[in-house]
Structures are given as C-alpha cells and as structure tokens.
Amino acid sequence: MASDPTLEVYEFMAALRPRAPIVGLDLGTKTIGIALSDVTLSIASALETIRRKKFAADADRLDEIVTTHDVVGIVIGLPINLNGTEGPRAQSTRAFARNLAGRTDLPMMFWDERLSTAAAERTLLEADASRKRRGEVIDKMAAAFILQGALDRMSHIRNEN
View 1: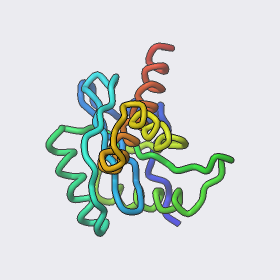
View 2: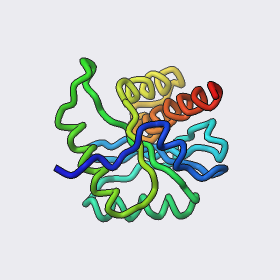
View 3: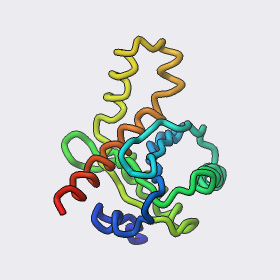
View 4: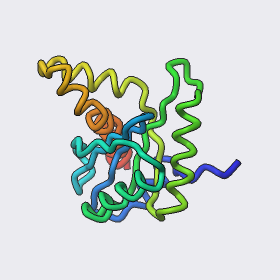
C-alpha cells in the first residue's frame, strides 16, 4: 500500500506560501464539493460542485481551479465514522489523495468531516432553501464547513505561538 501523502496540520501550515488561498474538498461518490479560502486563511467560501466522472477528468478540473485561484494547499474531508473508525468511503478518500499526490506538489491535509454535511444541511434549512436548491449546493457548502474547520484550527495554532 502506498504511503499517505498528506501532512499533519503543523507540517501543512509550514508548507504553505503566505497570502494565498487553499481549497477544501468534500469527496462524494457522485460529486466533489469545492470551497476556497481567502488569502488570510480566515474565511472559507463555497465555490463549486464537480460532477464526478473519471479521476483524470476530476483532477483536471481541480487543476484548473488551483491555477485560476493561485491555490497553495488542499484540505480533503476525511469521512470518519461517528465511532472513530474508517470505512470504505475513508479508504476511497485516501486513494483519491494518493492519486492526486501523483499529479500535484501542493501540500495536502485530511480534515475530519464528521457532521459537515449535516451542518450544511441544517444551515440551508434555516435559510429556508428549497429541496432543489439544497441538492444543488449541499456538497460545496459541506466543503466550506470542512475548510472552515481546518482554517479555525490553523488560526488557533497561530494564536498560540
């Protein structure tokens, strides 16, 4: 089995170029939700949802986003079960990260995505979004929750030092 290409949070932070955004990914079986941070790494915003095809096509679109927005790092939501174990979706996410590492030199980090989709759904329900609208934006909103969690942790670490 190939080694894990992702970094721990401290290593990830050290690998980032200052004043540049990072992306967050919510990998689903049919879609990839994408969120983008601001250059100060303070705020995550939902950006786009990719309809999954083959890995190469998905990675090509991700490459376009990375280039367009001058992205310097990737946070990937890791779907850990509520009891802390990893199932088939986590294994699939780890495989995606290994494949992506073969195409990019950008630092990558996993972020526990437990309840991110539920939080996004709750936010959309509170905003009175229609079922159709929720379906259109849920994945990129979940990516924003994942990325915001990572940004908040990094901010906390910066403030400790």
